[in-house]
Image (cartoon, rainbow, N blue to C red; front, side):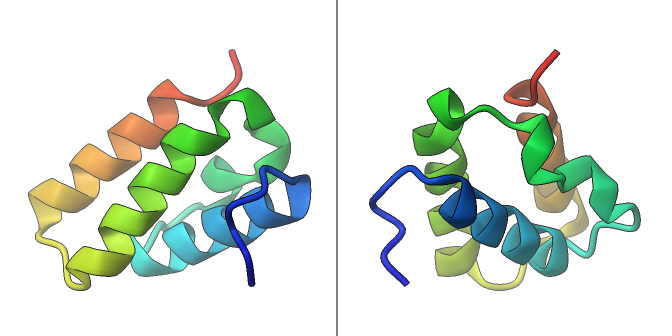
Length: 74
């Protein structure tokens, strides 16, 4: 999948993958409808970081979730 293009489908894919990788208890927190395509690059950056890092510590997971929360629509 080419994630270079900011599409709703790509956004959903990345958020679903992040929810799984971060072991989010409530996946609705990462519902793609709650995120704006204007923040696509920020989310892609986080997605790439999580994928590159692989296993995350509990504090790293909390930090990524907090960062995702900060780019969510108000």
